[in-house]
Image 1 (cartoon, rainbow, N blue to C red):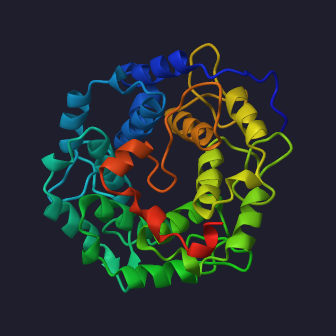
Image 2: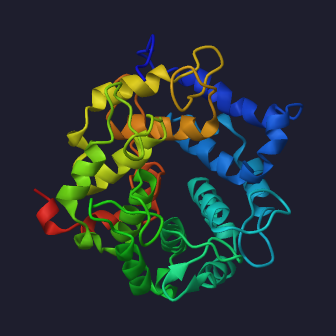
Length: 331
């Protein structure tokens, strides 16, 4: 699908207002239907605002109080108050608190015990009900690396599990035998990057598969024969950045696609031009523009492993993953 009437400028002020309005739509059904995503929605909105260098647009103390209220007795966090714990929302909660300088307000041991308790035979479940996925392996590693308790995981078991999900095309699926998918590629690469195990990846083959995700319109898809989607601006480019091959796609054309998916009236970015914007695609569209080196606005650099501003990641002592990249990749 070719983007129509692409906008050449990043509508930063409108995107800030779009994010600020999200928690004021109490009279809309969508607000209540997405209640289970509230914690992750705050993370997506904050990342976008931080990359725009507009972090003060939201009340930080109000956010911290709300996030702390989403922690359950098992140590994990739910997607909203009184919702069951899940690794996805625990990750978002930890990232939000880290970005806001409030990570010291949670009991690290409780969160660590919750995460470690979800690992069985190297594999990690998303919650107590046992769904297993390479996403959760990455999330467990990412959470504990931020808490400084990574040594409590069976990291070799996780590496073995991630390797078992690697396919002939160089990509990764949701588990052994799963179809290669750009989002799963990101989670597996980011997991291996944190653990210093990127050498197990077929760099050339995977880089080629990722580069093939770019379509004529400039946008990226997640797997062959699928439509372009703004969110893959993050999943694909972050993976290529980790691999040191972000230049293998036409970044200028990609930026044009992302900008064309902006809502010029209300703000926000949609999955593709003409669709309804949401905070998820606004976040990952902004992150994609940052990774692509967009020149039309001074976006803050984003870390391709943690999807947070690089300066925050480095202050937290998490930027050391770059020191573990294989020497042969440093050409």
